[in-house]
Amino acid sequence: MIDTEQLRKDLLQQLDALRARLERLRASKAQPLDKDAEEQALELENAEVEDDIEAVTEAEIDQIERVLARIDGGEYGICVDCGGPIGEQRLQANPLALRCIECEEIWERRQAGL
Ligand SMILES: [Zn+2]
Image (cartoon, rainbow, N blue to C red; front, side):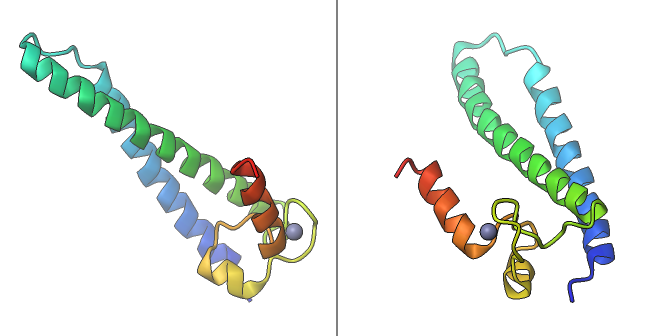
């Protein structure tokens, strides 16, 4: 059995860390650019990397929030697409899985546009 109570605590901790990271990213972006042209180019490059990190962090927060909502709703471990069990082995390998392995493959293929 998956200990959802423990998982919930872990996820809430992760969520805090991710939100703190997001805040730091946004704070550093809000700083005005340096006057020096070379420095400016460097900062713009950094800003692009920061945008990527920000997008990934936001996606992680979204996923954790979805999983937490499913734990609270008693739906943890149930595939969001087919409503079947995700499987304990898969959940242990990936506690944030929202789909069973079959649906995940279909979903990934769809995401890839195939
Ligand atoms: Zn499924």
